[in-house]
Length: 263
Image (cartoon, one colour):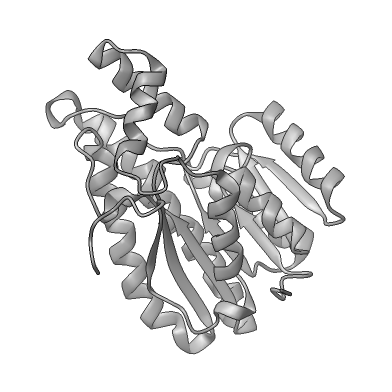
């Protein structure tokens, strides 16, 4: 299926590894030129080389911390300088620390807000003028199944990611006349460094092995396995495409059937 992404310009945040990397690679394989960013410059360079080796697109790699407003502004400015516009924005960030309510200070909460919510707001604010001008845009926010079914030890993620959902739903109605769609994807357990970190944390807390804790993640998954990054990336590529032009303001789970909600 031709998704109509050839020549489109996509910014994918936190894209040197995990879900962000899988997404950038998938968009590039569909013909989009990609702007990738991360804090780790070495991994960023490795990812750029991998994408170029596997595709024929242009890749702009920029070292950036999505918690910093000036870094986000620099990414968008450099993308415009290089490509002239932005068609697709994928908002992504590593998750905040796992833990319970009484473990976190104001500073930790504010840091998590900058990481998840403010990065999404800042990137979206900066790219929207270009999308409105060209009357075409796709914004996809990578969230978590915690926005549908909160997880006990992820109070930071449970709370802040819901704010992204509310913003996306409201904004999607405001920009729809410009042929701009805004959607959210909510992955369940997917084998990334983030999941490995959560498994290690819980295993330590429970005094069990990594393998024993990872097995617990599949107990409530009807497919009896954790997901692959490329499975989420496939959905994001579809939502970024011409084929998804009438889908906006929705949150789609990718969880192997794990969550039990109906709506």
